[in-house]
Amino acid sequence: MEIGLGLAILGAAVATLLAGIGSAIGIGIAGQTSAGVISEDPDKFGLTIVLTALPGTQGIYGLIMGFLILFRTGLLGGEVIALTTAQGLGLLFAALPIGFVGWYSAIYQGKASAASIQLIAKRPEEFGKGMIYPVMVETYAVFALLMSIMIFMFLPF
Image: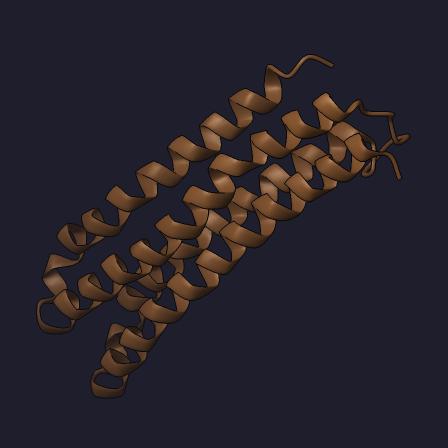
């Protein structure tokens, strides 16, 4: 395998792995809090599941970036193209924003979601206010995905 293609594959893996790990941790944090709330009041399942699922979006963003990279290389849906080392590095660098920001933001979004789940345990009518805190963290994952896509789109091929 040539170096450029290997670097591109590494980029797809980094975006998917890091953002996915962060999402798994974030959902785990929120899920633990949700399980505690549900053990006391099963009727709050609908409210808690939304907040528990929020940190999963970063994993989806990383997966999207991974697919974009694999499509660009031809590994998915086409003929594999020869990439220079610089092109492979470009694709690897395109993966870094969503990989790293996705990783960290998913964990912190899980913590913000857990706090909001505790809020709705006592005051379910405040669900809308509770959603704002984890969504604020989501903003930075969206920014990172946009930067990854911008780098990806403007790479010279």
